[in-house]
Image (cartoon, rainbow, N blue to C red; front, side, top):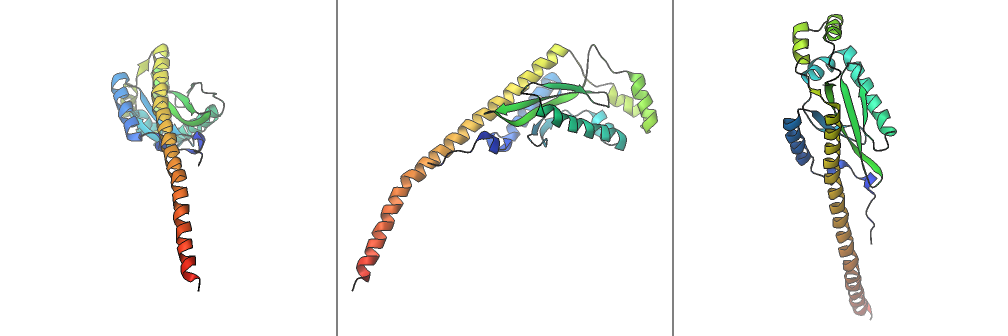
Length: 216
């Protein structure tokens, strides 16, 4: 019987319907106001919701602040390499809080939950620093601050609860998908194993018939 491949050889979209994951992230965004996305094991962004305007239209759009974003992306990869399944938190060079938490199934890192682009209630943004940055980089100060002001402020304990919930939700979907896929492949393997003797018998009958007609 053909043995199923180990979990680390699968991609996330093979184990769960990413559109369903996106729908759940959308629902979570409406309830919590927290941006989040999935990263596959190669740090490619999969379903994501709630990106803040200050990141989309300013930080990712300017070469200097975008370079800080790329540094953060590289730092995410480094964090994941030594996270051991524990969520990691850091403040990006653009001043925002980001959190990443690996999804490990069958002992292998399959994907990660990423959330961030917020501030803590006990550590709100320093407007003067952002005003200084807008002047230094040539941002439209009024629009830049309009993008800063709606940024969410979260309680630290609440954030940890949200991240744990998201992690467990996606892990549940992934592990269910893995079990379904392994079961489906096992059934297919059994069917092929059962079919093989019948195919061999048919081949032997055909060979016997051909041999009998070939004998003078």
